Length: 229
Image (cartoon, rainbow, N blue to C red; front, side, top):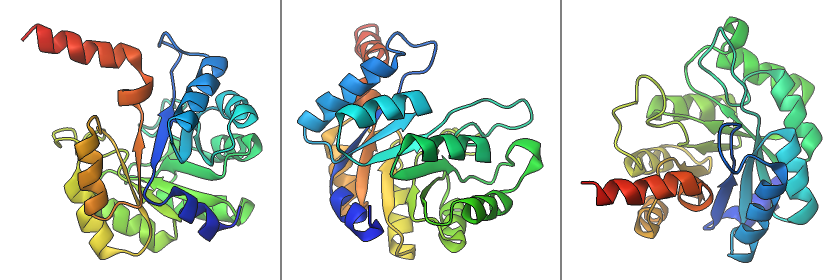
């Protein structure tokens, strides 16, 4: 799909993250594909999904653009979102329109820097659309300078140096949107419609929501904790 057409399709809309890790009750490519169908019927403009299996299952049922990732742990790095070229290749093979990856300052497996990883991807897959999952303003600026096609605030609050950040970090949306022309995606800790409205008013190109929609165990915990206060 043409980049500008894709960005136009996503602009101002909601992208639903349909993910469930192995330790979660809904871990199943079939279940994720049905969640994606529900999201599409609810008006979502895109899907974010994890793993070759889940993405291919979703693509069979849903005709929305997919932001694909592969989460995999490595012993020598804290980076686990599309951490190496192996994961990039899996996402490309799945047919996802956009590949998202950790674009923080943390070193990737084998001590690879973000600069090195970005160059490696572009050498092998020069035409793919890449989204940078960042946690700070500085990381967003760096991702923009490298040439990422989209920048998302996904990891704000989830790196060791941003763990005290109150979420959602709409101020990060505002500062990045004012500083760069690359589309900025609001993601990370969004639970209420009014938070999405604020993110859009601050310049977000689109919003990505996962846990608040597709993780019933976490949703249940939030309600239970409110009763136990």
